[in-house]
Length: 220
Image (tube, rainbow, N blue to C red; front, side):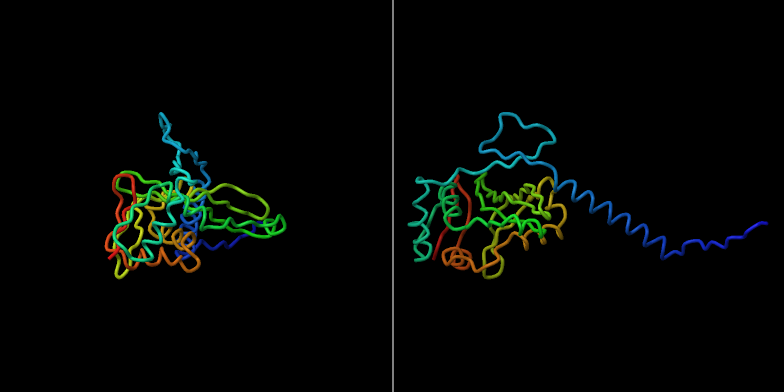
């Protein structure tokens, strides 16, 4: 006996939904793959770069040489003249100003989040690189996740703002996807009130520029 199965062909909505889902899933997998690509962290430019390898070259470390940042930041707070900051001073300030976030093993096992690391500053010609060595915590598992952006400061309304021309999250080029760039800026941006000296710098400086391997700030 023959059985006639009346199978309905998928409608146009179903076809479009399936195609859209496939594109979104493919894009998500591509993003995750690029984010997961390992980044080689170095303290100096390699003698020869390897094609296909993503590097994060850190700026000069902080230390006693950079302790003069306190006197220079006081001048910013006082609003007096021109202040020049080196990589050492910027990185010493960052090390003194940002506390490391620590989670217990129990907390790590029950959460999914990105723990942002201490900012690292590197001056490259007329540009500033800001990077953080972060940790991706995935319900007990951990993986390094490097965020780095290179750009300069620009006046936007009543404030100065760091404007990246190139940014990477792992191996993912954020600057090629404005939406991802905005999400990363929101996630890794300051979550609390900025220190007084930084707030004053961003709102009252007449110029913020990079020249001769220094961050130059001119106050009124």
